[in-house]
Image (cartoon, helix red, strand yellow):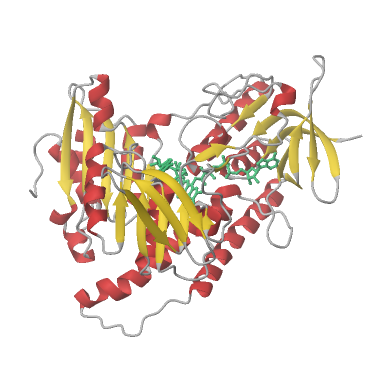
Length: 485
Ligand code: FAD
Ligand code: NAI
């Protein structure tokens, strides 16, 4: 007799493991299945985010920022630091330790919450119309086992989009996995795609002195961001020594030998351009991962971009099967995946308890952060979206250069912009580029979640001197009454 569960979660990334913990907290007998394994062949929970995404990339960004500060920013403080060097394998080992601390931490959370963890690929099997449960086969190198479950939550995440002319070998041509595991600083690094990964990974290796060239197909830069923020970022990044960003290019070929990678591309000039680098990162987006899930056999509906089709409650076309995170529509962000996981767990409890209370995630208040230097963060609508929708709005802006804390930090680039409804003053969007805006954006998210007006933020007392005063002043300025400019 196969093991039986209330809920089977396939995938233990931030969507899946959070869904599993919440289901278990709500009293549902839950199993979480994942195939990811570490170099020792053991299960490694946490998905892309913990293993090869958010956490390791931020660990390296911090190391590189420290190195960069010591060399380029300490002198302005009168601090002399000579003979600074970086031990790249040690830095990578630090990053790996942070990853294993967190991946084993999830295993501990599973034990604490009584979530059953199973290691292997989960494939949903076809069922007859009268069957009440779903059967899932879990197969790994050692064995295959079948379990049954009333509900299934698919949280199988995404994988890097490949370019046929630049196959990833993680030696010369790297995806995020290879980019996070370099053992030495490349002298010259190429990046295809000036998106989030390209900019973050490019930043890491540039700060260590690599000559970084980013090639972007689109004429514009950071299309999802507010245009003014994207323009400011472009202006700042273009001035960075050792960093070149070219937009509006078309890659013609990528060839490599043992030593170098040669990229041929066209730009606005009539001549074919050539870029020769030691390593090339390909970061041209990610695609939903449904490989081996059994989606064709069970007739799971998938759209033409490869996303599992779900409604606002993450319900698929199949009874009691839900899907969350990168494998469905919406931004590919860890916190969005986790919130969908929680919402689905609570929706399932609603059905089981007979209350039928459903939960959904409000996409309008999902914050975005890009961990470049300066950082970029936003929530809500961009100015171009408001214009396109014909929404009358007012804007208040304030620069970091006029803020005492930013001056003390020596990080004065950028600004905060608050967009509020012209008639009601309700905040519609907040856009930031500057120091630690990854942390500052939370105040804006809370404000929007509580339907605050720009006047609400303007009336709140902000500590002095703090970076949060920039948001305060921007909110004041939505009413034309900033105090310090
Ligand atoms: P994933 O994290 O991809 O997890 C899916 C899991 O499912 C994997 O563990 C996989 O092994 C498993 N799986 C797949 N198919 C099966 C199967 N059939 N059977 C069993 N297991 C299966 N987002 C942020 O919000 N902030 C950041 O700073 C950030 N930085 C990033 C940096 C990089 C370099 C990358 C690549 C991504 C980053 N992201 C960031 C995006 C973030 O990692 C994803 O949005 C997030 O991991 C999605 O979570 P998920 O649970 O949907 O999927
Ligand atoms: P992306 O969608 O952010 O950017 C990809 C870029 O590549 C785009 O600008 C696109 O125009 C460009 N591109 C596509 N094809 C190209 C080609 N042939 N030649 C040149 N340029 C081309 O995707 P990315 O950077 O791979 O990241 C994937 C996702 O991971 C992000 O969208 C984000 O959701 C998530 N992520 C989030 C982070 C964060 O929250 N800080 C950090 C890293 C990733």
